[in-house]
Image 1 (cartoon, one colour):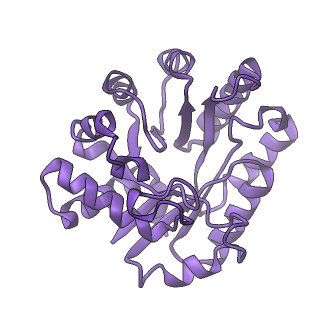
Image 2: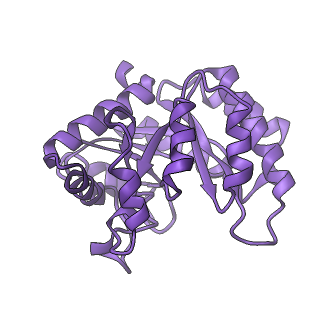
Length: 257
């Protein structure tokens, strides 16, 4: 069965705290999903959803949009939440320079603080990097990742992917892989070692090509699986098995449930 390695099922666009998605997981062919935190509230909501629903796991962290909220008090709260049996990662954390108004220095400080937390609590990291390749690669090169991590919704070059892979990270592909103009991304997806591949939706965002204009759902991870199978010359069933095994290896607390 499928594992969606990155979704936001408690997002207000769904309006039910993820209950409908969780109820349909078996029907939709989903074995598990990771509900990812982006700030204090969404992290708490993700943990609450993981407590309520079978097959739902959580991560806690602050998206680079909100570096100013990464206080010692919030980090202490994340440290406590990280002990929960179903909190499987710290994230999503990283750098995002899409808008010139973003405070780059503050983002780097917040990233380093949350990296240090992940190392302290012994969890893998979910990374977000957009239009910040230089600074993010510099961050990677200066550090080790004892519990590994994943590049969420990867959209960079093969050269950057190689650096991530050499650092022991996984590469996750989402709906962008299905776009007709995603030639560079398709090339990267065809070259990443099979034991480092993950698939995701980033639901309710980044709907695949077949669902453009619609709210994205974790079940659409099957469309990413199918595109990846096409690119790799493997069956959908093989990609499904490989990516599920990879997710359980990376998010090792899943296997304890």
